[in-house]
Amino acid sequence: MYLVYNEEQKKEIPMDKKMKSRLPPFTEALMNHTKEKQFPFDTPGHHGGAFYNLTEEGKAFTRFYGNAMFAADVSDSGNNPGDPSSHEGAAGAAEKLAAETFGADRAWFVLHGTSVSNRICCQALLSENDLVLLDRNSHKSVYQGALLQCGAIPVCLDSLRLKNGIIAGIDKRSLSEKHLRKEAARLVSESKNRKRPYRLAVVQLATYDGFMADAKYIIMKLRNLCDYILFDAAWAGYEKFLSLTESLSPLTLALTDKDPGLLVTQSVHKQLAGFSQTSQILKKDSHLRGKKRYLPDDVLDNAFLMNISTSPYFPFFSALEMNAFLHRKYGHTLWQDAARFAVELRKKILTSCRSIAPLLPRIIDGRPWETYSTEEILSAPRFWQYGEKRNEKEHFSHTRIDPCKILLTTNRKGRPYPAMLLSLYLQERNITPEKCGLHTLLFLIQPGDQEEKAEALVSALIDFENNAWHRPVLEILPKLSVNYNMTVAELGRQIENFLEEENASRLENSIFTRRRREMACSGRKATEAFVRGNRKLLPLSQLKGKTALECAMIYPPGICAVTAGEKWTQDDISYFLFMEKYMNRYPDFAPEIIGLHKKETARGKKLFAWILSEGTQRV
Image (tube, rainbow, N blue to C red):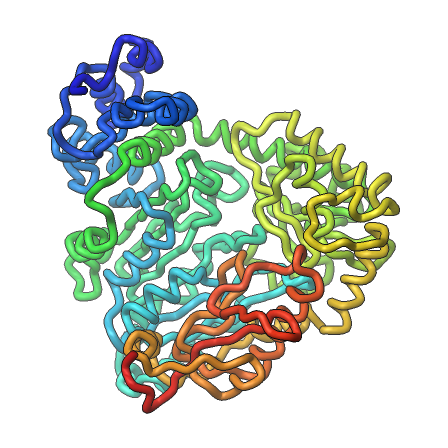
């Protein structure tokens, strides 16, 4: 079967000629390619779906996904539409469009997620024993790239955690230049003679729980300390297109040679317009060109080529181009509309619910937040600055609540209750929150959200409060693995009593807000020891003072509680012992644990960790 597309298949790939001429170059070239009769002898092996269509089962597969998906999955062996990793031709034009749209000097399209984008940036800038400033809220990919792969030496910036474990950004007290220079000299003595002791600082531009940092403030505090700042904007990217947040973006700032170079990574698939795994790296550092600390494009491209596939999926690349194209033409309008939708949804929840509320400053100038007009709320930062008391407002003066992330807190009659109860209830109704914490639920808002979604969510929240609370658990949540013979209210009180007895919030705060960690060796050395067999598997109770060989974390959000090379502390052990009890007592409610290993014992599941064991032979 040489001819891939028969006439019936070609009819399923319609394209209006007028519309086609308005599309960006790579996408248009790919669409043109799929419309032409092809005789491929290259990869991928399904040849436009022909392989699948030899069988009835395969035809069912291609029918479900549509022929365009297979027709557009082509090899980069041909000239049209070109090699996405070459940065030339239509592919290069697509990346240039993204750079111009988002305010960067250059862009790299990454088809394997922002985990890979972060590792690329770290590998381009860091080598063994370089100093790196790490936001304590950094994603595991930053730890993996900077510490495990590059062998850099970390200094952590303290993070703020609110009640209920809400991730609120960097504690600005940890940005003291005097303190950070002292820490650098303590770890690397010769760094005290360097003008800028840190090669790289990594900062979360937006936290998973919806706090957005002021990039201008961060740059001002770190400009004398580091050569480059990597702003991990996995949970942002749209700030440039909202009048309320535009000033927070690192890519809208005018920079001088006294400022650091900037890299920004964006998970286009999260709240922008992209397929899963689509990501981009944006580089803004032309103000450093010619200086010793400048990162040449070729060095970043070398790290890029080491981390990408030589068999890219062209629709992913096309989606990244379309994301830039749509934002360039319509971004401001689309995101202003999305923000209005988010404000109106918050208002509906505030006026309809008693035990569920969005995280917001509740009173503004003596009036409830929801009594102001939507346009006024979207025009003034004071509606998005967390903190009711003066000292809270001071802590959060350079941080803003993200208008397009709705973080709901669960509190009934003055007492919190497990948000997972509500999350599971919503999922029974096909409403999927992005994330569930101990007492919080996160909902992402983006262009394209319709009123039907808002109505479904508000209706479900009201029904949960009014009808579900005093009904049997198995009637409301029939898919639970454990038979809880009680009402939802009774189960909620039981779990909450457990969380309070275990001091869950205090334990969580203790390990994520501590600035200094004791490193027994670099993350890279720990990883090498793990591979070579210098390892031993021990239960939690025996880990104190031992050197971790893996990063241990709760997922989501994927922030390392313990990283490879660090010594396990009693706080770390206590936190994961609590999680061990949680997963045994309430398996449907406990979060996923990564970097620790479960074993079935007579007393239930136990958690074990790999630690450094000197003298163990290679296995």
